Length: 196
Picture 1 (cartoon, rainbow, N blue to C red):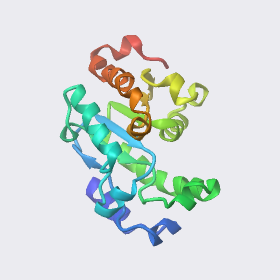
Picture 2: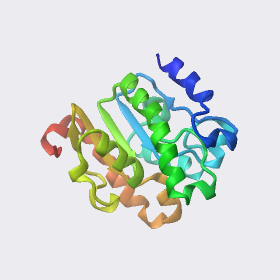
Picture 3: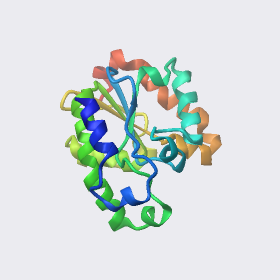
Picture 4: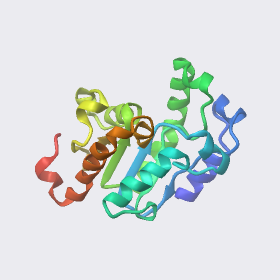
């Protein structure tokens, strides 16, 4: 089923972003993984190859995964928006909201198909979308406040974290982000520490 979704994403023309993309950026990694990482949108580098997290933020993501003993082959990674958003669209909130509204259909299909036990959201944007989707609207706060905390809704644990791109801009936060990532090591105790 995931292959059918990926093919539809590759050929999607539901919004104007298909005019400026090289490739739709589909999710990648272990399709049987119980951990799903969700970012906002592909980088320009991702757009060239059709895979997520390939730029500097991807290098940082790899480092954070290795810190907790994981590799990309252990997890599934995707974005809400599936096509690269040129800067003029990123700054145009109405167009960005339209892209999210259209692309979230694909993300919802990925979540349903992967059926993860844990969803890790990167940054405010992905966190807000997932919290809204899972009925946690009242828990939405700035990522700096809720990062590293474990929430549970509809049988899925949701963990908001800083986006790896943030660390590329603020390298002094690397150790803090590594500590936040370590919450994934406590998955056996999530029931005791989660917020619903």
